[in-house]
Image (cartoon, helix red, strand yellow):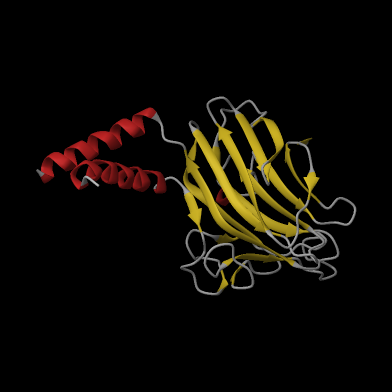
Length: 251
């Protein structure tokens, strides 16, 4: 291996990784304390009836994952049957251009009988109740449906059978320039269409994750979150220039 030739690639990779992380959401939950996730990393509790927790019950990588739990309390204080854990994380700013890639893994135990919704919002969730359009990725664990599906402002994609008791990957590719989104579950396409059907420019601000419905039984687990921008030509050029400058300075 030629070390001197490898150094520019290493520097380039590190610079690109640092630049991407400044605008991204990535999390495997390994560095957090067990228990309430509120305030750990950039996760914020959104006022659910139960905590969103860092748990060792299940994990795809490492030993920890994010756990949300349904609540069978009756009457539910929010008049939402089964409403339990609710958490969100915003991007540092709202983005209006570029292609963004989402990937995460979900584990649905056999006894989970409610719904888990991940809402990709075109606004920052912290701004209030107006989460805008975006896309909802839904685990529907009810006996009636037992499926995974995606919906956008009333438009529902193709539901596929829910896989239980194992980790399954969910992905979405959001092209803000073209105003399109493509989502998959376990490699199967579940939604392909418009990202924002409104009149404002397409944008992406954060995500909200919560559970509700069913008989209020069971928990669900998430691991290895990644919401990152694809590299633009300008970003690649800038990182390449910085890498070249770093190597010249080293000489």
